[in-house]
Image 1 (cartoon, rainbow over the protein chains, first blue to last red):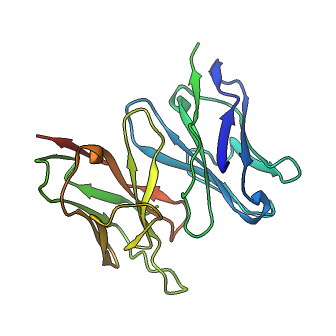
Image 2: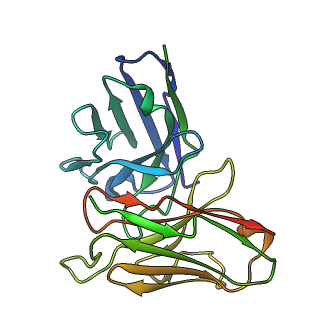
Image 3: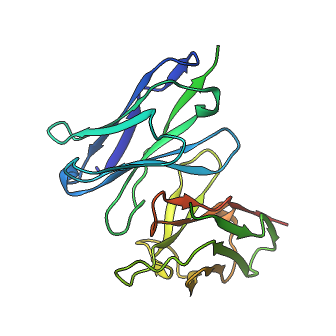
Length: 117
Length: 112
């Protein structure tokens, strides 16, 4: 079954760190770039980051630069998002989604990150 | 960063009637390779987004043909020829020509 499953969300205090995971199955993971997209409660979609299929290239949205790092382990069919120095405005559902042609053709159900003291 | 502006932000529609959403970008979305990376997504309440249209006018697999996309350069449109109950939700345009990729604010479609 072709799917993406996010995990690792939870409640964290401002300034702390959290690592999200995205487990892929049912397709050849190492042939696709992968993205993180987030959605604050009641708000729209915001692109966070992308990593190339082999992990050699990464790009970040403005809110993620310098604080978030995207990585992947193709041997485990898993992508990660390391989030440091978390802020209350990082509270959101974080989705992983597949790149390629066309991009955003497959989405996970998301994992909720709540940054609160 | 490219700013994507959708209009309207809310669209009450009658079942069976057409609907149209506009998306304008602050810069041309024509890539140096000649392609235009503009897609449309649909999100129902409590669900992740799903891809409808990619590269302006290509319907994704399984998307009904009542959905169509058009446009060029900086102006793009999503049309629903006859709205059905399952079409309610929020529609987003997204550009992938320039980093960082950016979404429109979303347009909420609801049934009158």
